[in-house]
Length: 106
Image 1 (cartoon, helix red, strand yellow):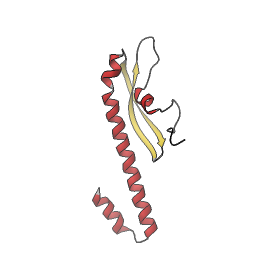
Image 2 (tube, helix red, strand yellow; image 1 turned 30 degrees about the vertical axis):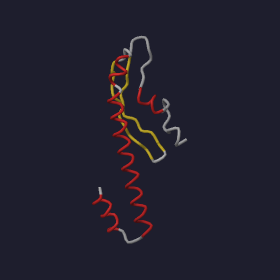
Image 3 (spheres, helix red, strand yellow; image 1 turned 135 degrees about the horizontal axis):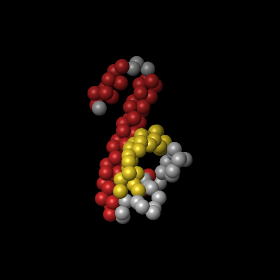
Image 4 (cartoon, one colour; image 1 turned 90 degrees about the horizontal axis):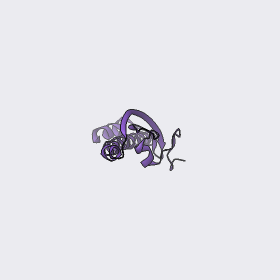
């Protein structure tokens, strides 16, 4: 990571372009870290959701625009007989069905 930033610094002579490239690098890094954190939380929710009688139906990819950019992540869909299918990770994060923006981004 430090090497990549150093390469950006050395590769650009224009101060503004250099700073913009550094900003883009960090925004992309934040988005990647956020996607990893969401995956970890989704993994940790399995036991709790299964204890409520739900079973994993499938995994779906989703993208959501947050204050720092678009984050692509995979989350589990759960089903239970007689109940609506649900995405507990989306519920936890406040990501509404069919909406593409987080609450803060709105």
